[in-house]
Length: 302
Image 1 (cartoon, helix red, strand yellow):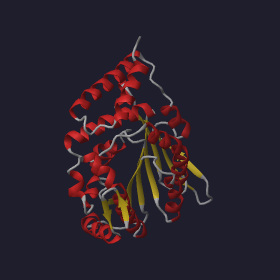
Image 2 (cartoon, one colour; image 1 turned 90 degrees about the horizontal axis):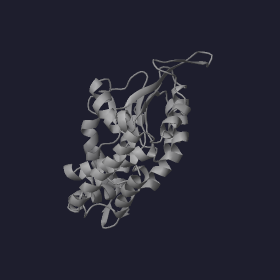
Image 3 (spheres, helix red, strand yellow; image 1 turned 30 degrees about the horizontal axis):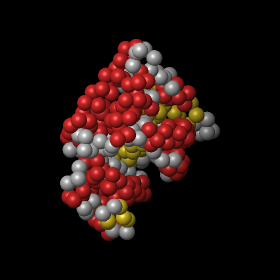
């Protein structure tokens, strides 16, 4: 049995929730000769889910894929009705372990059945670095889309996203700097694992996008590689932009705000976010105020 403050659930309840979800999730999904994994990766707040839902999924190229996680899966928690009375942030926090167990069951069924999979990776666990090798060993072809941005941009974006979630009564959370620090430290190993996986199965791809303040707020594809593996084990690469290299991603995350116009935008975004704290003061953690003011102090022109 898993225990959170005031809430419990049993393995049987996880299985029951999974059974409800899989009844429709796996409906009409068929295995393909070469199974595929679509990975959308980036820091929380980088815009990876937006890329998935607004660009990739509408292409209809991924209709025969199984998506491992959706926020609605959290509502299957047996005590969700009690949680949500205390707000969406509270419900998000206390459904985290439950939804991870459901997603693990979805993954196990999809992977063992060699179905195509949609996976979102926020660099929040080193487990993502160990996974790709086992997937390519099972014959999976990777299509990886990495959204790069600075930690600062991701943090401000995540705060804006949390406020939108409060307004729309959608489950989300406010991220701490320490959480993003951890993700930044895990990213190199995880991205290397995805690159290695792409080179292991012909037809795999790695795409890198840049996001940031100012003009970069609109995501831009800057690197793309498609890999082919010869019978002798050699790997050749083709590209429509420039070939992927980890250095491209590292240059993006180190691209700090210098232009006065971009600094003005940071200050504006933080002030607008602070205005929203007055509406949601009972739900906003104290650290959010400090983080927003710290960015204002850092970027204000004096």
